[in-house]
Length: 138
Length: 138
Length: 138
Image (cartoon, rainbow over all chains, first blue to last red; front, side, top):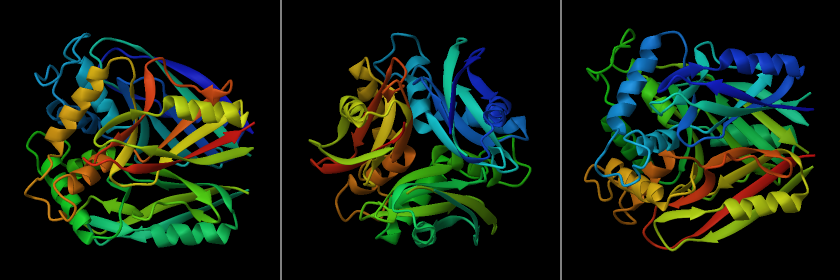
């Protein structure tokens, strides 16, 4: 059995967005009990990650880390057509994930207690982000 | 066909642990010859990677690199409840992998000659780490 | 249904190589319309990424970023047997991807408009790189 849907998420600009509920709901709706759930983002300036879901400070610290690691407006960049957050967004994307594959067990993604599924918007401006979710199994 | 098991690994603190043998053994036991093997770690302060398996210096150098990249006790971090290695462990995790997907061919993971499957414990203290292995195919 | 092939790519040394056409061709040839396509590189000094495919400046800027992030000949490294680009290549590999999983829809990988599949050769010298492609579905 395979269930697939493209979900759309409206971001309000740079930051992290918890997709856990939407993904788990789609898995539940699929009726698949044992298998895999695959999450794929169709963009190169936003990405996915599994991260600690209890303390919002973790997200703030990750943002601090990335801002320092891949500074906006870095004078070394030449791809600057869309502004200072254009190239830094691509760098952040390649350092994180475009796709996540998660075990489905008992009808939901078998995440650890502290794991959440996040979309990380790397652009300053709001964007509409398309995420393809695929659930396969029995 | 699908075979799944949750393996548990007891780490002795920060460092890399070679899981290749355990994973390959589970694939062999599954009887699946052609398909995929998925490895998933249910934590956000330990991660997975495929890495050079011949020279232990590689692991030491990776540790050196990460310690510099994501320093413990970084004064920029606010999520510090569990100590100086708390937030740095989350950063290291998002820069590496929580899940690996590997082709199974001829009854084992078709790794390259120099590829090993490693768990990277990012916390100083020993931890019990849960890893879900899924083998799918024929 | 499962289709698998090992593709071989001859690199001319450090740089990025667009595999999108070869991968999409293999998916088309497989006849599979709905499912997943998995791409796996059997090396630890070259990697895979999904990246912006329109402006070659992005690749140059990523190279600039990585050269600064993981400098060749870093005096902190001890694994130097194969030269100054040996250990830096391993670091670059663990910061990017060894495997990509992509949704197949309508007989091709459902990439975003600006997403391309790239092999990133991290060694200075030309190498022959083996990539296993697996397509599964109906």
